[in-house]
Image (cartoon, rainbow, N blue to C red; front, side, top):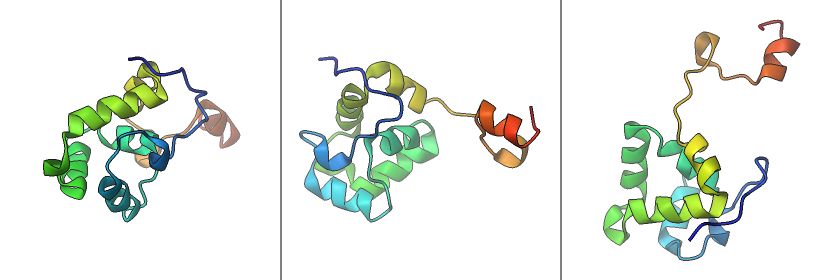
Length: 106
């Protein structure tokens, strides 16, 4: 079931995601992870995915099922972008085009 397309600036608090186990929300919040977008971004690398699994204890439910649910909430296109690894810029900084112009970097 495809979710509604989200505004790219909109965030989706984990507390509003239907079916997300409450203990997962609490464990993620303890690590300052409070939105669907943050979880999806973390899941884009093997290390991030392992970190998520260690935080939420997958025996409480399938992480893949939860990631699919979060993808539906934010929209599949946006979820795919969030899960893409960014290479970053100088010193690993990831800047928008506007920021690069403002700081004379592009």
